[in-house]
Length: 228
Image (cartoon, rainbow, N blue to C red):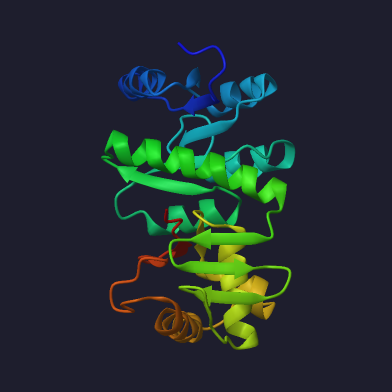
């Protein structure tokens, strides 16, 4: 086990899942601590984990309620393990402060990528980096300037507000409700948001029908992918 890798708290009541995660993630350089219940998870927060992996189906408390309690005392990224088709649970978890989700059954490569993205996003958010670049896309948050292939792109105020929100949370899934609340000040018609996302893709993507920057998380929301 690495002595200085990120510390991950795995919260799952199934021993085989915890064993799989422990074995696979230690090889990737992470340090692992475990909890099989919500009560155990709250106790282990005192060890200041860098990230939490949380299964929503715990024996002593609903996982959504646990996220609510965790967010009152800790800011560590939370990656949720959810059942396939549990869109309501995903949305609720993200709206309460979870950073990402992985659907069971999951591939370990995908989970590791989501973990690294969540850790990187937290560093970016705390650092407040004003210049963002992802592939051909550039965003200067101070000058409110957006470029594609170094050519300036003109956005409407609402288009820019949506893109700015995605940039600040680059790599993280933002729910429809979260975006509407932040940009318009209230939850509203999701179709209205989809129109603006479509307009943004036309201006920012090489192929709007196969976007590489603004990705759709079906039934949940959108994610700004960070490209090399």
